[in-house]
Image 1 (cartoon, helix red, strand yellow):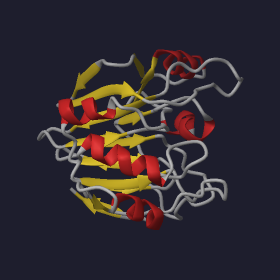
Image 2: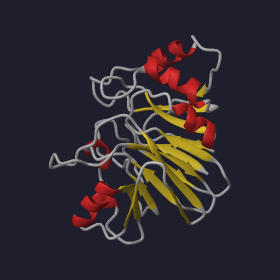
Image 3: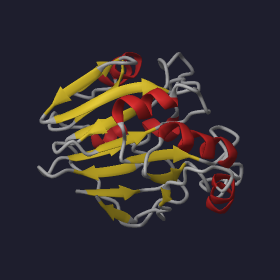
Length: 228
């Protein structure tokens, strides 16, 4: 199993059974690596409708071999744009397919489609792989107390947490999120893409020093992978 970071909030997951999953597939951002796997992917997960998270979904989902999983409003939007296979969900639901489970959990953010219309509620995803290994992608979010329930119910082994500030949690809030989730490993995301995203890994680590629970922080540069 392997997790690859493509920068911003985009991650690729390769599973034991050879399935390929990509989350928030914006592959053309300013910090994107030169080498990117453009698929085909088995599944594409979209956390919300902003352009830096919808990203290149229309290009990557051009065949029915790829299934897009997103909230209902995004599903309807991309179907109208010609995506042949898209499954709509809503907060709290679990979609089980191909030995995997995709659980849609809350996020605190906004969500609008490219035309400015409502893009449904923003979300995060808990992804349970074939062997039970569990990854939590928080999506774009502020801090909220029910992160403790996500940790309690799903016990993610790895949490992918935004730290960039301004549009999402900053380092201070992300450190508190780690205390609520209790995931043993955390990969920071959604930072450094633009100057306005000022949160840094160094500041994140300093904020974590205030707490007794200290997860292993694994910063990945765009293009780097982690064996799971």
